[in-house]
Image (cartoon, rainbow, N blue to C red; front, top):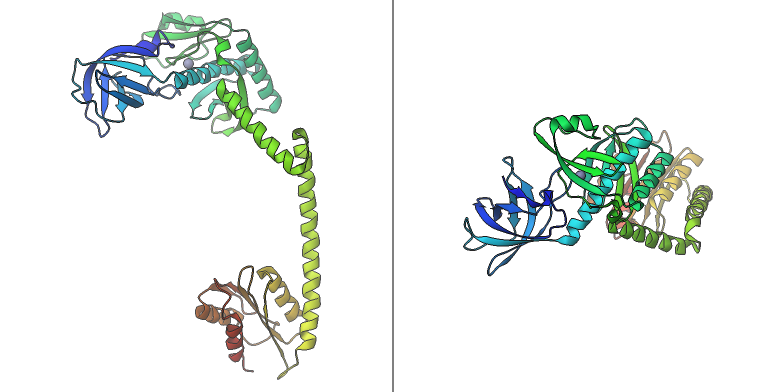
Length: 405
Ligand SMILES: [Zn+2]
């Protein structure tokens, strides 16, 4: 087993060690006799840093825990001449470690807050690069509870309570009323004791007093498999998250020429306006299509008992074309409409009054085969889109040719 120096001192960022073995994996990796590098475990992600030998400084990109308790340090390049007995110096990326200690310690404080206020135990903890989350075993969680837990956790932080590590036997631990007792496999347990607030078994790295957490900000909550998931950020992460939120809000507020706290009200107002304008627009288009259908039918003379309307527009969208097709074929019982538009998206609509003998779906498919587009529809109404507007008018003329009475 590797001697874990971080168990005794979370603030130990530099240490000397000896190579125990060079691991045969696709990535170069080393096992040392002792290490201050924390391996990914218990929800906390691994440290990074450097291993330095007499002439080389290699980046430690990942640290993991093998089943036999040895800690594996993955490197970005092989350490030449590395062999058992070679002395190396380890340097932990201190900023990253401090951040992890803040997040992980915040988790202890927060989990205890949810237990003491609402009897909601934490069933799992997850640490990602930008935020952390805990899963609470509870059938419900409301905004007031989230805010109360956040306030309580920050009170504990402000009080700057001591965070101590001690070792006890399993029997002793069972009598102490821990927040969380790990499954029975170890004789000795490492306890993290936040004075008069939280006592739990944990192998991670923590701050030495709660003030070092530097702030706890609760974020999104969502229903999770076993209750509710609560996202949070602590320390510098809380500051940078709040900074990002503020920048976003400021940018949005400027769009409305409003103060940041008026944004929800302004956004609601703008959305209501959009909804009402959309409704007005639909109504206007309906009226326009109706009027245009009347004009087109007046302009088109009847041949063999029907009117054939062929029209290519330069700037109508497909929806309007469909609307116009419907109006044309409903205003009169013997109309066939072959319509196209060149922009914004070149498209075609073929329509006929109910009872007319042709098949608009089949005719449109044939036309699409000529133009290289896609589309289809029913016997009386069909639509399709093409990539280019060239040849639309000619295609309509060709389609009309096939509609001999
Ligand atoms: Zn912990």
